[in-house]
Image (tube, rainbow, N blue to C red; front, side):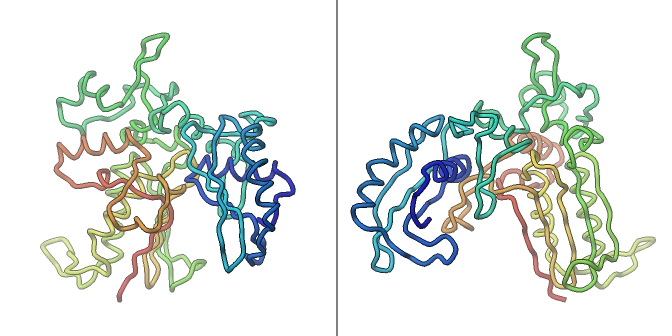
Amino acid sequence: MRTVGRFRKLAKTVIAFANGDGGQIIIGVDDKTRNVLGLPPEEIEALLEKLPISLADQIQPRIYPHLFEKTIEGKEVLVVQVFPANFRPTFLASEGVDNGVYIRVGSHTRKAQGEILEELRLLRSRIHYDEAPLHDCDLAALDVKGLPEELTTEKGLHSLGVFRYDSVTGMKVPVRGSILMFHPEPDFLVPEAYTVLSRMRGDRGGNTIESMDIRGPIPKQADAAIAVLEDWLGRDPSRHGARWVHRRWALPMNAVREVVNNALLHRQYSIPGPIKIALYADRLEVFSPGHFAGPFVADTLGDGTSYIRNRIVCVIANGTHRKTGHRNSARSGSHEGRGTLRCHL
């Protein structure tokens, strides 16, 4: 940010960072060229005095960014360090909580609306998106046979978070997470909770050999997607009775299963849009709608740090694991986004 001519614009950016993973705003750098211009000492002193008061007056609930001077390329700039807000959504007080919530979309600040605004409100109440009850679904519509017998009782299902008791009627109301895991058609209740699987000709998009929609509860989507990918990636088939069995694959199937399960278990289901899996001539791409589940710190990538977004989905997945013995990636947590596995053909 070159200068701070309008504190209101800065306040919106601060709100957007606070509603996400935090971030830094550097005042004294050209927005377009990223050239360091620097600030005169008297301007830095004035900003250090005025900015905290202005931001405190404009933002609700109040947040307290850390302001400090920094020397970059021999020039003095002012850094506004914004931390993730404890109580979300933060919003511009003059616009209210319905119209004044902002988020970061790439390098831009945008007003939060629809499902994203709803998810931020749920965070404020300490409820995950998949923990919210859906009154449009009856508990009897869920197929829980995949769970161990002791967890299929009312007490067992409640311990997993499969349903909540309505505070007025006392009725058992399923939550989104259990609908995603157990309902035969979850995409009717959670928009676009399905997977699009495509095989492409060459190494670029636009030339599709075949494509299919995979629907159903998360475990069935995972099994179906992996079965198709095993066939597409298979090499050196040999006849075993009435079946053809592949002796090797273009990619390690353990890695394929992990990335598919991660996409399904940890995606941001508040954002409409299916998971997209595309097999190209040289790679497998998996796109999972949403942003990182927790703070993004580049230095921690690969060190085992993880964050759980869909708590109920992961608890149920681990409950199913107890019966089947089948390993899934619910324990690992995940980050959303685009994942790529390279093929060596």
